[in-house]
Amino acid sequence: MRDFMQKILPLTQNYLVSCLRTGRFVRQIAQIGWLPPRDYDCHYFASIPANLNTFTTNSFTIMEKSFKNIGYFFVLIWITALIGFHQTYTIFFPTFKGFRWEQHFHGAMLMAWFFMLIVQPFLIKFGKNDWHRIIGKIGYVLAPLVCFSILEVSRLVYLRETAHRPENEVLSQLSLDIPAILTFGLFALLAFVYQKQPAAHMRYMIATSLLMIGPGLGRALIIFGGIPFPVSVMAVLFLSTFIAVVFLLVDIRNRKSPIPFLVISLVLSLNLFCWLFQTSDWWLMFAKTFANIFF
Image (cartoon, rainbow, N blue to C red):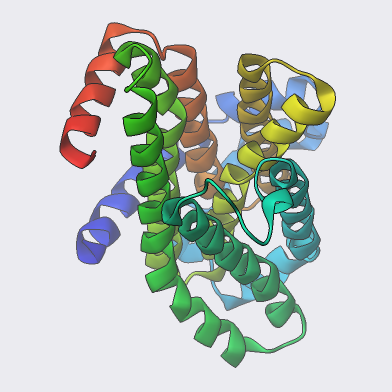
């Protein structure tokens, strides 16, 4: 699989970059003030790296200037998750009456991933590269376990809810769970594929954190803000996509390869698309097929 990805991804990324290097996409962004006038010059667009092979160790050093505080961003998402899940989970400590092993396992895997996300950039920042690589290897095991934990919780909820609710209603709500499994797996896989290209690797790791904004912040909006469930879901999905687009524009402005955050933005947009069309026939058919296979 890794060899396949290494062959296919360069072809895809080079095609996307060739589109960007025509200048039309970024020129439109510049016209609304995101880029300075000097960036209208087509010579600028031609200077955009043509592929991710330009992400060397030196470019990683430059990237750290833009993302040197990304660890604090991860801490913020983690705190938001703790707040959001307090009323629905941690408040029941230590008995956790009524909860099942799937939910505990899911929480443990996400906390472990948060730990890795938070620690890794600080290890790089303080020059502990050996420890960064050692802890990074844990991700090869942890990422599949995170996906498995989401799958198990989704299966638990599906079987529980279909016992007393119309199946189509439950299938429509899988428009959150199924994309989360597939998207997290994709971003983690891309991070592993590009582990020797640090700037791209870090961007795909950042992408996994964007997926974790929704569960915690969404619950906080519902519990503490009184915001209806559908509205809160729309808000957090849009926020995650918006942050990815902002990071994309920062990369374009700083003349970095736009491919990682362009891919991330498009994938997150697909997640939002699935939620918007959760009651459509094509989604219900896909979700039903997924449930029949995995649940």
